[in-house]
Length: 117
Image (cartoon, rainbow, N blue to C red; front, top):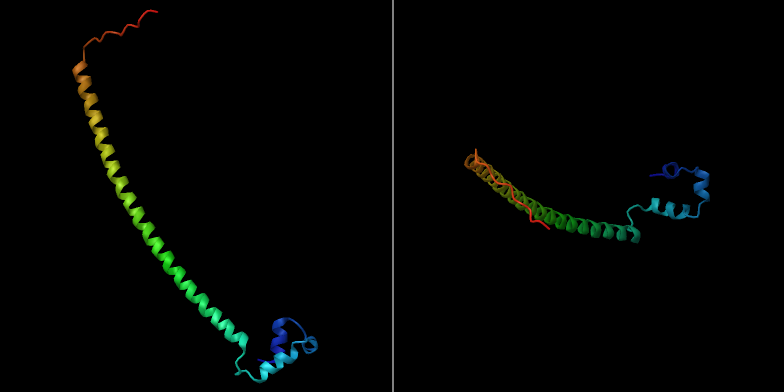
């Protein structure tokens, strides 16, 4: 990593970089790249904390998804059972109508008379 690379990455000229108040700090960092800096340690700790939080959230969401999938499966089974029962009742109603039609075929049914006011 060089000053030229840093200036190019930042989109500024080398002269602007050297006039910058942070130029001395960057020069120091470039001179001793292996020295630990508190900011880096803090950022690494933050990354570890965020990764742990992400893992925990993924576990929670996975458990929630499994629970919701079980609920969906239960509802699907209940809907299927109700649909079958509904089909049975519709068939029973059709048979009863057919029996009623056969029993009343050719029979004249009296009209109901309305009471007079």
